[in-house]
Image (tube, rainbow, N blue to C red; front, side, top):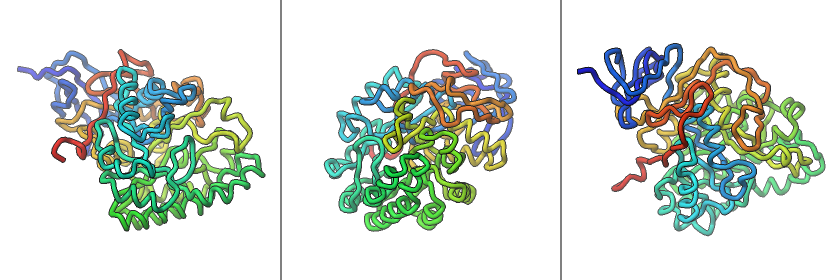
Length: 446
């Protein structure tokens, strides 16, 4: 009797823990049931993956979907639509919304808002503050929570934990890996006049200079050493931080973004103005090469988009009144595939950064691998497809991308979640049905 599946991926080049090779994958009841030569098998739906590489579903562990409170910039539906159109099957959403995600009620509200509206799988960060520090061990284990997020430096929203005593309380209390935006707030305040006097976005990396980032990261690691915590340091921008974190991998994991790996000052500010403004800033070519050193040497664990949209009208305000942040979830994979095409990293290394890495660091259950028993999440890519990234093709509400006009090689052709094809050839299929992620660290009895 031939095997029967709900979904059969046939003839693709599978990118798995065993390497890269031709093969078929059978999915039943949302889970991978068989991998190999399944020519004799039958299925309710067959996807011809000939000529395509089949990745595990891509996971973006840093997005700001702005809901609740700033839905004029972005919302859960539009943000997740952009995610799946870009080949992303799951996201971690940030807590600096309005109200802040700092209590069970706010988390429950986000999970309720996501139901039947988010296209991709999802989990939400709990913001760490002086007010909820003692409750965080319980809050971080709530279903649908991916962990705790701390802002050491001010950015979009009102979530800020700048002093060491509060950092020590939070990091001493929690058990899961904590995501941290590491910029030194006292130094930011001291240097803000530089941005105001310049009134030019090219001053952004001067105001929020490399020392602002390195000082915060060193403060953070010192406290981590005291408390025994584990941290995930987000959007590293300086070569010095990368070298420093390479010496502290026993307690710290590292994220880089496609923006910081691809763009460089001063050109990005000359060409894009405030569209290139984000926190921490895009820096010069020397720092960009330092980030690539960290990626090449294995210091970088995850690539996250830091998708953080603002409207074009808001971005057109005079610097520094213009808000920091740019969209990115829909372009994360195309930009990184283009780096693969240009020989900057291998496809297996990319899979580790956007599939296996998030699972390894955050304990996501049944994701990130093409393996029997795992969820049937796949990102199908054409490594030779040439496309031009355009503002008008972006699903985000703000309707723009910092990569407008950039031609890339490598493109997501289909997105599959739990055995359901949700995007094929750039078209959404069916209805939004993303589910909350589960975490091994929060399962009953753990």
